[in-house]
Image 1: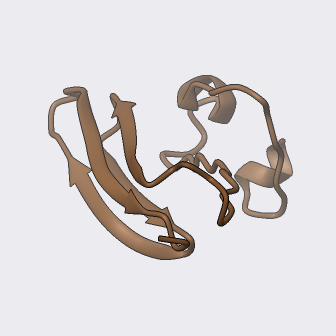
Image 2: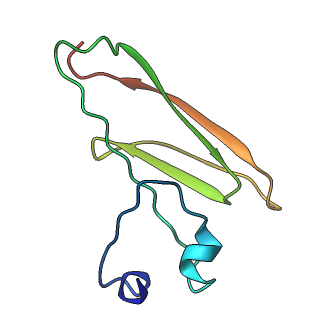
Length: 89
């Protein structure tokens, strides 16, 4: 993991990780990525990305496209919500 924190690798986990524990306070940056596969037969028409965070800033991308940012000061938590369009509809 040390290589990853220095920008020379990657790792995966099947659960959400807490930034300060993972980075051992070495980095201010931490990326979460997830994957949801949909198809033409999927019933997912109205989907909303919702992220609850205590982070300072959140930048959201879906299918490599920027969909928005949100931030708070003084360590306040916030909820980012943005509708996501299913490309098959």
